Length: 81
Image 1 (cartoon, one colour):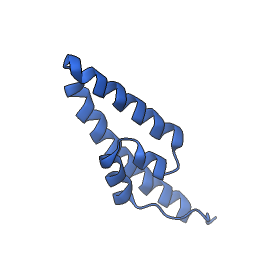
Image 2 (cartoon, rainbow, N blue to C red):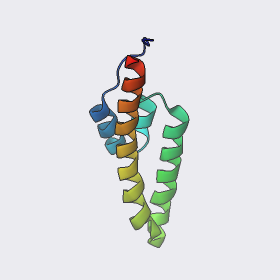
Image 3 (spheres, one colour):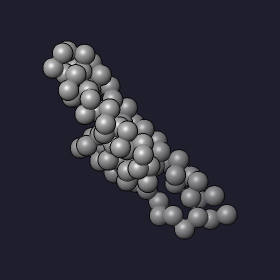
Image 4 (cartoon, one colour):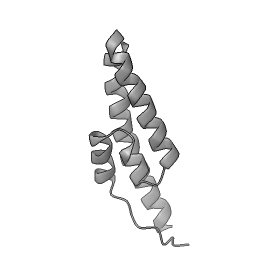
Protein backbone atom coordinates (compact mmCIF):
# COMPACT_ATOMS: atom_id res chain seq x y z
CA UNK A 1 0.00 0.00 0.00
CA UNK A 2 1.44 3.36 -1.03
CA UNK A 3 1.51 6.19 1.47
CA UNK A 4 0.90 9.79 0.47
CA UNK A 5 3.70 10.95 2.79
CA UNK A 6 6.39 12.93 0.99
CA UNK A 7 9.80 11.30 0.86
CA UNK A 8 12.37 12.64 3.29
CA UNK A 9 15.93 13.51 2.34
CA UNK A 10 18.32 11.58 4.62
CA UNK A 11 21.08 14.06 3.77
CA UNK A 12 18.93 17.06 4.69
CA UNK A 13 17.86 15.33 7.91
CA UNK A 14 21.51 14.81 8.85
CA UNK A 15 22.47 18.39 7.95
CA UNK A 16 19.59 19.78 9.99
CA UNK A 17 20.74 17.70 12.96
CA UNK A 18 24.28 18.95 12.40
CA UNK A 19 23.04 22.54 12.53
CA UNK A 20 20.82 21.99 15.58
CA UNK A 21 20.68 18.65 17.36
CA UNK A 22 17.14 17.25 17.11
CA UNK A 23 16.10 19.35 14.12
CA UNK A 24 16.55 16.42 11.73
CA UNK A 25 14.22 14.29 13.85
CA UNK A 26 11.62 17.07 13.79
CA UNK A 27 12.00 17.28 9.99
CA UNK A 28 11.30 13.53 9.92
CA UNK A 29 8.08 14.10 11.86
CA UNK A 30 9.45 12.70 15.11
CA UNK A 31 8.64 15.77 17.20
CA UNK A 32 8.99 14.16 20.64
CA UNK A 33 12.28 12.51 19.75
CA UNK A 34 13.62 15.77 18.33
CA UNK A 35 12.67 17.70 21.45
CA UNK A 36 14.30 14.99 23.59
CA UNK A 37 17.52 15.32 21.57
CA UNK A 38 17.40 19.11 22.03
CA UNK A 39 16.86 18.84 25.78
CA UNK A 40 19.65 16.29 26.21
CA UNK A 41 22.00 18.43 24.14
CA UNK A 42 21.11 21.51 26.20
CA UNK A 43 21.90 19.56 29.38
CA UNK A 44 25.17 18.40 27.81
CA UNK A 45 26.05 22.01 27.02
CA UNK A 46 25.50 22.90 30.67
CA UNK A 47 27.59 19.92 31.77
CA UNK A 48 30.48 21.12 29.60
CA UNK A 49 31.22 23.52 32.44
CA UNK A 50 32.19 20.52 34.59
CA UNK A 51 34.10 18.61 31.87
CA UNK A 52 31.77 15.62 31.31
CA UNK A 53 29.90 17.48 28.58
CA UNK A 54 33.06 17.60 26.49
CA UNK A 55 32.62 13.84 26.11
CA UNK A 56 28.83 13.56 25.89
CA UNK A 57 28.10 16.66 23.76
CA UNK A 58 29.85 15.48 20.56
CA UNK A 59 28.59 11.92 21.04
CA UNK A 60 24.99 13.13 21.24
CA UNK A 61 25.49 15.48 18.29
CA UNK A 62 26.87 12.72 16.05
CA UNK A 63 24.20 10.28 17.24
CA UNK A 64 21.52 12.84 16.31
CA UNK A 65 22.88 13.21 12.78
CA UNK A 66 23.17 9.46 12.22
CA UNK A 67 19.72 8.81 13.69
CA UNK A 68 18.07 11.52 11.57
CA UNK A 69 19.67 10.10 8.41
CA UNK A 70 18.64 6.52 9.19
CA UNK A 71 15.11 7.47 10.19
CA UNK A 72 14.60 9.44 6.96
CA UNK A 73 15.69 6.36 5.00
CA UNK A 74 13.32 4.16 7.04
CA UNK A 75 10.42 6.57 6.56
CA UNK A 76 11.09 6.56 2.81
CA UNK A 77 11.08 2.73 2.76
CA UNK A 78 7.79 2.65 4.65
CA UNK A 79 6.31 5.31 2.39
CA UNK A 80 7.14 3.36 -0.77
CA UNK A 81 5.47 0.14 0.49
